[in-house]
Length: 196
Image (cartoon, rainbow, N blue to C red; front, top):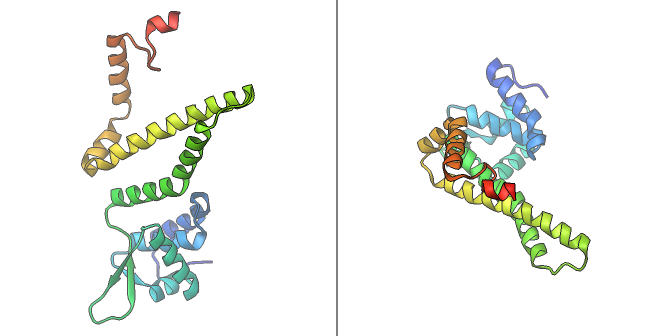
């Protein structure tokens, strides 16, 4: 569905792209476009303005806004003297990333961790189950470690987190240097263990 001509070309391209990418991120095209429009809007928008700009039905916009509110990606605002509800995306992109990551974790990662924990409590009854359980333990430990790291990053100030991300390969070089000093390989095992 083409966007209204009064939306500038750059804005139109951004909104259209988010609509196309929405399905890959687990949301539908309409929701993706609504979010993109709110993200780049200089002011909060009401549902009628969103529907007019994107040429969506009012009911589709209402459903999309409810979904975005459930994801905590848009906030409801009221304007003085106006009974309509207005919506805006959080201004801080780090806050948006944090909320999106938390929601994906709650909806997708935690159910998997829960299933893995339950499976690891089972007593294996065959070699095939022992092998499967060992693989599940590896998966559980990796996801659990990533979630612990994620929790630590979430506690950082946005400026510190951005600096950490900007360090990239520097962190890898520091860890490799530390491993050489302690006699450990990058996998965490000692040289003596490798030789054994």
